[in-house]
Length: 425
Ligand SMILES: Nc1nc2c(c(=O)[nH]1)N[C@H]1C(S)=C(S)[C@@H](COP(=O)(O)OP(=O)(O)OC[C@H]3O[C@@H](n4cnc5c(N)ncnc54)[C@H](O)[C@@H]3O)O[C@H]1N2
Ligand code: MOO
Image 1 (cartoon, rainbow, N blue to C red):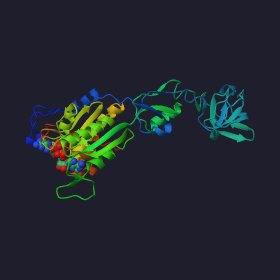
Image 2: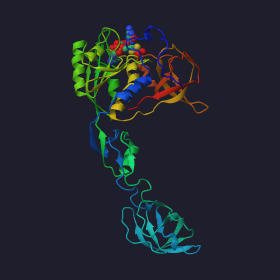
Image 3: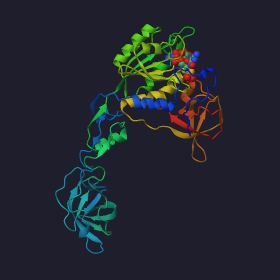
């Protein structure tokens, strides 16, 4: 199903296109981010204890075989199967005891057994470990009635990783599973990408700190705490956070200062078409280059990406829901690209719980809640009747965004739609 096409015909005045800056599709915007964003080059070396969530800057190769030596997979007795004459049963003297962590020098020579514990090295001469439950121990001998297969219960050296194997490629995000692989490979220090320096500039004369005093026509600032929380990841250091000045000159100064110290400047508000919208003029006054400005989506149509010198700029709309939605779709893609992490396919198909009637025009990213599975095992989503770009209260009840095709005015219950879960960190 193609769902991210540009608008074929605008639905109403709100959807009208600026002929100088035509809207592009979601996938075109993401393709431009991928094509024009170079990962920030700085790297640092960190011990395994401190790499959680970071992005690898160099591949990790195993320093030795894993396991490094043949070892027992069970507590029991190591024997040489070739020394078991006839059909058994056999009585074997126990000649040595081998706990894990202890090098063994006594070989298993002939019809004898070595008491061995899980993880202990296999003595020379032995080629199988019999579980202790399968033998009868009587003083210094064991009674064995069934011949084990050669190799039984032995974890062979190198069976997990050969020496020099690439365990992880660069660009991988380091979670518990990746860190486990590095530890097994003996990579105790990793070279990872430095955190991105991000500056946040929230514009709007009307916004005041949440919960603080406000006058008539003033509102509490949702975007600063919302985006600060969205950016609280292992990739990001928020190096500056400020409320935007209410005039062009002040905004030029603030944006310029932020661009000088940050890899990424994120602004909210002030990017629509009104004469109070100073962000784009300030950006242009600083010699900024636009990668795109305006995407054929609802909400979040004015979302913009560009560069001021070496710093990248992500211009999010002021409406908090629009800012959150566009931050999830374009902000995360930009941060991943700057962090050197490749794009991660997170979209999947789900089915709608109820029919949808809507005004066609822009691809709609509607918050939706996962609601179990239908009889065919397909995941179902529930949602409001319309997208409300200023109704922040609805966001916490959603798990992600469903993508409604630009030209779809009517979808039945059970329609297959694309769904992108919200990033939880
Ligand atoms: N003539 C037109 N007007 C508008 C258009 C258009 O195409 N033509 N687009 C509308 C759409 S769609 C959007 S989205 C907004 C985007 O406007 P801005 O990005 O310039 O945002 P602002 O005007 O600054 O604010 C919009 C809205 O959000 C509230 N806001 C802003 N910051 C915060 C904050 N930190 N916390 C809470 N709420 C915030 C602000 O008070 C406004 O209500 O433009 C439409 N207009
Ligand atoms: O593009 Mo706006 O975000 O619909 O309110």
